[in-house]
Amino acid sequence: MANRGKRVGPKRKRSFRPTALLLAVGITFAVGAWGYLVKAAIDFGIQARDGTPGAWTYLGLACAGAVACLFVGLMLVSRMMRTLGITSAPRPIGGRRSSR
Image (cartoon, rainbow, N blue to C red; front, side, top):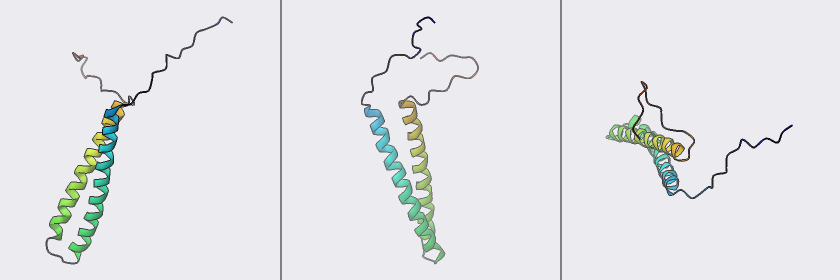
């Protein structure tokens, strides 16, 4: 058998990525805020069922805030995956190539 070359490319040097760190901190805060708002929504729901005035308003605001935090967290996760090279940008539709 002939000596064949390796099909493995050169190892890429891992380096510190401040963008990835910033995204990780943002994800942590967004998911933490989401958890806090879900807990608050549960508490406001209990108060609203007990007849506390204004609790329905706070329940709605807490729910909307929780949805927004979860959305932001998921968007940051997708950015993190693209930053780390796990996913890539989508290919253009219709055969057109981007000018980048």
